[in-house]
Length: 119
Length: 204
Ligand SMILES: Nc1nc2c(ncn2[C@@H]2O[C@H](COP(=O)(O)OP(=O)(O)O)[C@@H](O)[C@H]2O)c(=O)[nH]1
Ligand SMILES: [Mg+2]
Image (cartoon, rainbow over all chains, first blue to last red; front, side, top):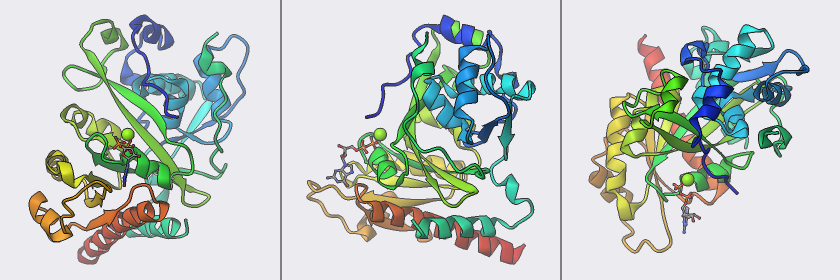
């Protein structure tokens, strides 16, 4: 079953979740940037931050976090920006394919092709 | 408290060595079979999420902007395929309607490529998507999702003409419900991208 779209009917809730901050703090995160926790949740932490730290005990994409928290991508990026700034999470490969360095694009595509053929 | 904190995700986490996320977008009109295709190849049940945008279409500049009523949301679903220990492919199902394209760059910049999913009973739905993908210079292939009650049975050649599709854009039949068929669509896309990359690297 696919759940219903997020209800953003109460703007004050989003305003509260993000502390009213702007999207300047997104830190170049992409939908598929993989996030990993660097610490465990601590007492008194904002519930959304706790949830993110729990989820990201294993690498988790930004878009999966948004789906689990039922919050818009923009809002999740702001929350992740907080945690990144505090060193509580790290972002792997902030730009797609950057991990492949100077390897030609064809090498990455070949890797994808092999992965798909092996499915 | 909040229900989000008590609800555990019922899905397998990625491998701890996972480091690279890649994107492929499946575009098509409502009911064309995007979610079905994602589901047939994904290792997780498709998840749903959304992005908020202002009336101007630029995304939310300030969360305070959410206080006024000029915001709207676009919803999309996605699935994923772990290609190997390090690399994960995310598949996004995106409705091809107009307001979605305002968010294309914001959501899908850096995408490997796109699949335009076509229902031959509503071919016109695909024109706009093809036009927009060309505009964004996103490489794509076209897959015709054949429905059982489609009496027309247009040939691929006829469909290519109707869509005014260049010869070098791959066009394939599929049944979005079947895993092998969905897999074949993805392989067609990535093989096309691979050939293009090789050609570029040859002349570089
Ligand atoms: N007969 C048939 N039905 C299909 C096929 N693909 C999708 N459907 C059905 O068409 C409906 C719409 O599909 P869905 O994937 O939700 O479309 P979306 O709006 O593009 O995500 C669903 O009831 C599917 O079960 C197909 O290849 N053949
Ligand atoms: Mg759908």
